[in-house]
Image (cartoon, helix red, strand yellow):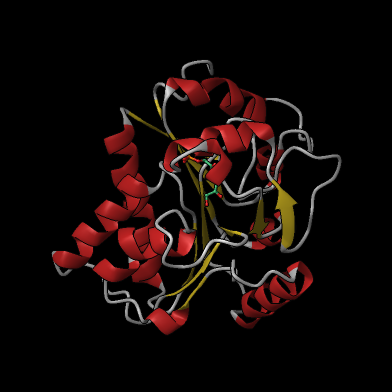
Length: 242
Ligand code: F6R
């Protein structure tokens, strides 16, 4: 595990974008594993900036996203499909046919997950997986559990995640209760994993995840075993780590 310590959210976003840009420069047809949430928004902004300045070309890049709410249509502003289009895909020259998210409108969970695993398998490996860190240690929607799930699966969101995500919806009742997520096995199979973490509210879980035991009770802790894991975190998030 390598840690890149940054001053604040802005600095974290710039450095994470630099790392992702280098992946694209080295392999123009790379497969990027992408995340949503507040943590990577600044990273996407910096990637868009690099593209607009003529320093980055997404024309051959392929992407697979970590997760999607079950039951939310793509045009719902809270769907991860909408998020990715709003924050990245509509602002760079990526070919939309090369971008993939689990199909939230497929209500047959087995079908949705099997189809997504086939898409991931057809990519021949994810070159870089971007992650955020949930307050309970979740990655994707892999919530604290008694075992690590390997492939794409349907999860019931925990009360903590529903509570954390309610800020994005009109009311807590509107927060979907289920989601499709890549499994821990798929995340661990990525050639490189970059996690962006910012803020004092993440300090405790960051310490637990990366300086405590590896356990499914803190799903992110498995990343300690990843051979090419880069944690890009700001001073606040690292404030409990010596
Ligand atoms: C997003 C995702 C989630 C978030 C996590 C942190 O695709 O899968 O695991 O990365 O909930 O969210 P933020 O960044 O909003 O604190």
